[in-house]
Amino acid sequence: MLDPDDRILWIGGEWDEFALANGGSGAGSNRVLATPLARHVTGETTRAALARMIAAVRDAGAPLRIDYRCDSPRLLRRVQLTIQPMKDDRVLMVHDLRDARAFEVALPPWHADETAAARKCSFCGAVHLPDAGWNFAEDLGADHPAGVAYVICPGCAAQIDEGVASLRQRRAPSTPMTGGFGPGAG
Ligand SMILES: [Zn+2]
Image (tube, rainbow, N blue to C red; front, top):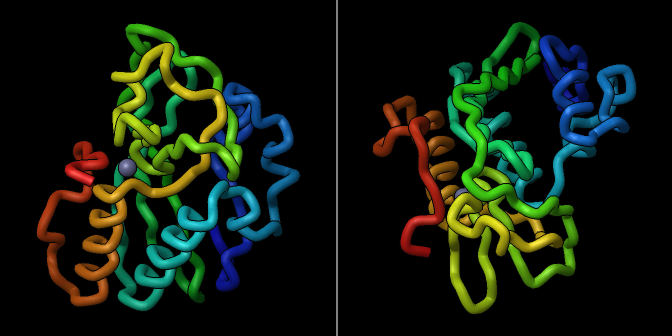
């Protein structure tokens, strides 16, 4: 749960377990409480997109739901994020694991590197390589790069834009916000 200034007010569920399983020992729940959400999100464009979605939820007083990928080297994981408005300008972010299955070929472990030539989408996990365009992680397998700069791919950026616009205009999104999306033609 976020307070009106987007600081983490409360963490429930399996955060600790999940952080530890993913090597995020520094992200245990008692170390993140009262810190800004943005401090725990990698990549400027990802932080900006989350801030836009959270602001739209507060302004519209309605929830926003969007799928993202949270893979580990061995597991393809689909998570549904619901950003829910609460009383007093608080916001609840619910991360619901929808699907987890093993990659046919495990990916090499990767890390965030802002200077890397390879870019990885924070939402769908697709990777852009200078000579290969966008590819899903599962299609790269062992060719997944080790260092990636986190960005948002064109398909996910359009999806987020539509999610925010439809919420602010109080209408249904023109494309489904859940059920899988990716880099598209970009
Ligand atoms: Zn994407």
